[in-house]
Length: 415
Ligand SMILES: C[S@@+](CC[C@H](N)C(=O)[O-])C[C@H]1O[C@@H](n2cnc3c(N)ncnc32)[C@H](O)[C@@H]1O
Image (cartoon, rainbow, N blue to C red; front, side, top):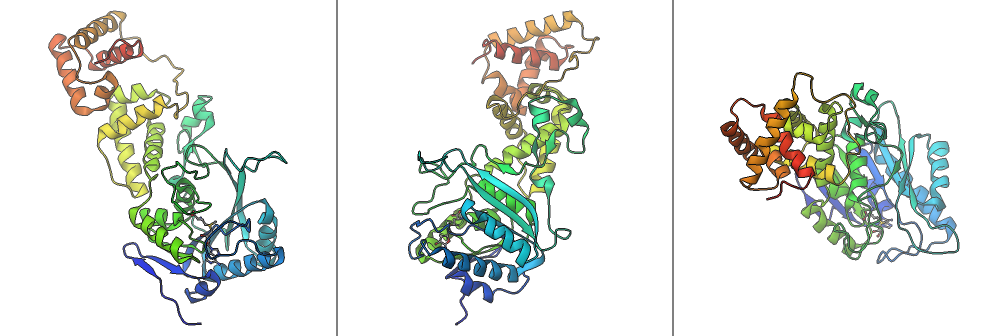
């Protein structure tokens, strides 16, 4: 067959989209040149993918499956990893094929769990797909756990102090069952939704796979591009990518999406803020971290450092603080309570009483914004501190901020 060129290309990082059957296109890609493969094949469920016939006889489907796997493994580098997203029907066959025939090592058998499937009452509703993670040589594979850490239940639900003494305080690598906010199937009113695409995978799923198993500049391949999730996320994360799609129309739409970029990478920002918070809070609450100058400075530094590590741009202090505050309100940080007594014995009751009076005075005179907004914003917080200094020049500024925030909790410190 004649050599096919990518039908779409963008530079920096190089992103190539081919149209055709991946079994024809893959032989044209250099052997061993791909660092990471994510494959989400048609499941043979008679889905309308335009030209592709998704209702093959079972034997033909299995033959097709082994053929595209072989073509993928030829281009995979010796240190490369391959992920395959596959339902119950064919997971077992693929696992046996990769292990027994291809001598690959299974690193994880993950589950992508979604909370709404196809409704039916003939048997239990399907709510999972298998995410099979294999490597040619597990000892050489690329693995970046620090890029995907999340708060542990031990830290957030049980406030277990031991979790603060680890190298990554209160954080752990995700479990092998994946679900949560934005992890559902991409239904009609989801802002990720691309029209005319069946079985679109959530961006957070690809973000986890790409961050954990590749480095900036690496080459990521998706042999079943579909709506373009893999290349969209890979590009946003600074990885080169190749996508192969059988349908010309689907490839065109995927390319538009890749150019527009992902819609959920914001989610990374939240996880950065969450990680930064847990790395400095030492069991203290979000309020404490925002109000206490030294904790806040450490938190801001940790946010800057995490963003740089993740290849994302740094932001303003108020963005960090406010995102933390929103996550607290949404209950995403769980229960963060320091069981130690918070006030040092040297802080006399009388000082606290005075701080409350000062806070009350400032609030009664009128605030430009809600008190939690003020505390998150360095300029507004400085103004608040100036007012404090005018009323009580020697008082501990932290105590007045804290008293003001406590009024918020009693609903008495609105605009
Ligand atoms: C399950 S969808 C992939 C969805 C994708 N992961 C996403 O997030 O949008 C499978 C896609 O592979 C395409 N396809 C099917 N057989 C193919 C083949 N042999 N070569 C290339 N693409 C193929 C289909 O047209 C369909 O768009």
